[in-house]
Amino acid sequence: MPSKEVFSYIIHSLQAVYEEREAQNIAFLLIAFLYQMKKRDILLNREISDSQYNAKNLDAFIYRLQQHEPIQYVLGEAHFYGLDLLVTPEVLIPRPETEELVHLIIQENRHISSLNVLDIGTGSGCIPITLSKYLKNAQIHAIDISQEALAIAQKNAQANEAHIIFHQFDILSSDLEALPLFDIIVSNPPYIREIEKKYMQANVLRYEPIQALFVPDNQPLLFYERIAMLASKRLKKGGRLYFEINENFGKQVTDQLLSLHFKEVKTFKDLQGKDRIVRGNLSF
Image (cartoon, rainbow, N blue to C red; front, side, top):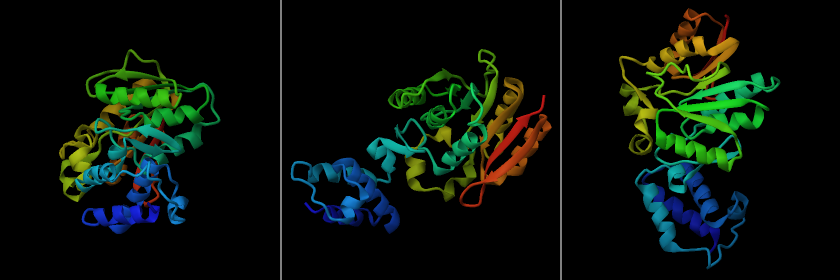
């Protein structure tokens, strides 16, 4: 079976659900997953062997995609900062914006050895696992409220040979006194307001874990306020707090850190030009 024929079939099957460019990207990913073909193999119209091609199996994958199920859940994997990660509906799909957060942390701290790092709301474990690859000799802890998410994160850590210390905590009710002091605390907490649901894609709303996405409209800074307060007590002097943020609340998050005696508080824009990261250093 010519690979371009399969490629065209997938795109045609998804045209009612996805725009053409996104359908093409999904088709490349699906063919790579099912037939171990790279993009250039498809462009060269390499043959898919009869032993590999199974129309019924292909259609089963396409059906799930037609129901708006994200390709990452369909394949059970997501690519993040050069790593392959297991993802299921128990964890949020890692986003490119979070890669930018991780990249900033690496760039600002890779020259420092033996850091103590904490990731709050770890989900798939994408942040601590990636940091473990670049922050040498760092001791990295990660917490989440969800036991199911922690199980996925632990599998990802094992698969990527990353030593991460996982804990189950509800950040809204725990003081983290059982944990050591940290040089870095990072969090990509829930930050989408309920009112913003109407602007979101169906595949996100149907399949991704709601508790990892949304905050009440009347408490948009719920997690930032709590985590910032904890960080002011659990960071070492000069320690750094990094947040991924809702683009609409950069000033409010910055003001919150300043009120807790963080210095050098800075907002960073993502590749789309939106406020996406806030970083502050604890001054005492």
